[in-house]
Image (cartoon, rainbow, N blue to C red):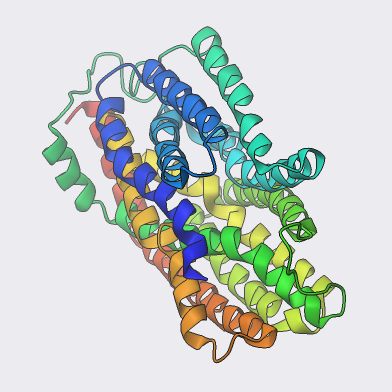
Length: 403
């Protein structure tokens, strides 16, 4: 169980440790060129990993880990460019389009990977699809995107925002209660999504055996339809969740200035019971499990764009890339970097025998941790609502006056 989490863990760790470097660079140098360099490197190592010989597993691990360079470059910088191009409701809408890529892209990965594997009977080809898309992304960045001035759409023309040292930035972020608490809430989201991304297809496959829909997989050519179905659900729920979260927060903002953290809290607190039901009902009905996962993931996806928007309006423009990096480090360190491994360890510890029943039952019980963590995340967002107005006003005052 726990060993299955090693490759994703390696990638997430490299992504997590590289993010602060790109955060520092993103607050001080040309962001477009930094992203282009990171994505180009990501494209090359992804392509290289698909040609790794069977006897060089360490090389595959290394190249998959280096993919974190590209992830760290654009995930810390891209939202700050969007923030410097748009403000208020328009910024939220643009961020929602950007953050569609997380759940939708993840779901497409399951779909494309399973289909390419079916066609070619070789998983290496699944890694040769994405480099072409990376090359297109680099070309579009170079041709279409222009580097905006930091804080240009927010600061008054007569004021010039001054950069501060990295240590000063970190201290300021540490005192920003809305940023810290929303980051803790986002960490809970990362914990749940990371656990589900790795273990949900396996759990669904084991659950299907008890509903007499499948036989246990004992060969290398296992049925991967559960990965396909889970990928489709992830795509659809990602789109619905992000869109509904942005629409709901936009509507509530006119009535309540604390709408954003409250919507995030509602999303996590509503996701918890549906995830619980999907796990508990799996042995009885696989269809019911898919339905509950659908609703649980929809509510879970409501906060992607909103959390990013919260960060951007409670943090001053010259610290946003650093803030993005800091949020990435915390959310991955305590979220999806360790959650798949933790679920595997708990599952192994609970297993009383190697029977198929106990393989299913131990994983079922360990996945219940996700429900508990989702509730804790909802509580963090509720706490964020207590400070959001004050921290937003302080950031706006600094941006407008330069003091």
